[in-house]
Image (cartoon, rainbow, N blue to C red; front, side, top):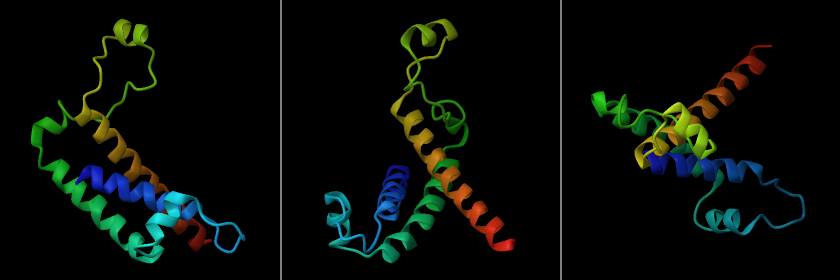
Length: 119
C-alpha cells in the first residue's frame, strides 16, 4: 500500500508539472499516464491511497518504530555511517521514508493552500 501511495503521489506531481497548452507534447511518461486516465481521476486516488497506507503502517505496531523507522542513509557517505553507527537502511525503512515524505509534501501543499485562501 505504501509503494502504491508513493507511486500515485509521484505521478500526480509529474502531471502537475506538465503545463497545459504550452504547444509542446507532455513528456512520454505523462503522455502514457494520460492515455488511460485524467488528472482529476488520478488526483482523487492519491489522498485515499495515502490514508490507507498510513493506516496500514500504523497496524505494524512496534515494528513501525524499530524495523520500519523512517530514516534514510541514502545520501550519507559510508565512513559517516560507520562513525555514527548507522546500519544500512532496509527496504522497509526506505519505503517508510518515501511514504513519510509524500505525506509531508502533500500536507505542506494543503497547509499552503489553506493559508493562501484564508488571506
